[in-house]
Image (cartoon, rainbow, N blue to C red; front, side):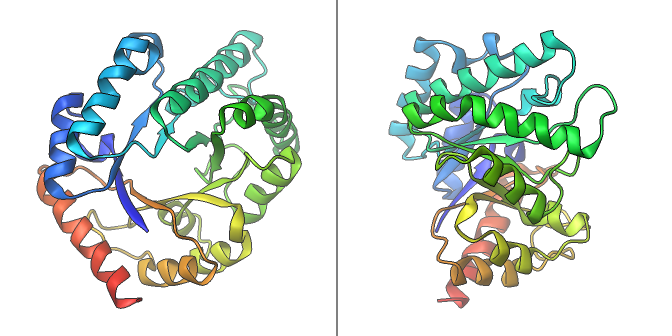
Length: 264
């Protein structure tokens, strides 16, 4: 497995500093954000993406995935048509950016509607939107991965599977977060086994502790379960930056590498 980290977990430094720091620590990759101000970011232009590709090549740090964090402001479950259209634009723009950068996966947080709607309606709206965009993802060869973020309609592995199965596309999988699962009082070990090859990518963080191993998440058991189902793709840290992102990143990477080595 390769190990990456989210930009936010490094304290959101400027891009040149980000790639240099991530390379210095020894991470294999970094996950970038499709933000609400997308049009103002480097991801939105050919020139900006060219710069990101150059930073990646020079540092040896891959960009395995993008996260469409902007969906928290414009959800695919939105009842407001302007918000729904914005969500569609952001997802399709993110797919195009991911394809250009060589990112194989795109995290789509299962954000709720701006209005109170039922769980069933939220699920129906998400499935509808994933079905709609699946051909775009397939053509770009980017896998969309709804994540168990704890709001909307995707807290559990069963709910994630319902969304993925409903979309009925090889390019709609799931982004599984072991820290979120623990926060919802779900068992990440059992949920990982349940989801199996529907897991496209994995977020790693602890709960009730800033550093890996300091909290209550069964990290070792989760990684063992991932190995059991044959998962061999990216583990992406979504850990707190703390007051010293470099020190936290170094500690967390060493911790995760140690657990993986023990499981060999």
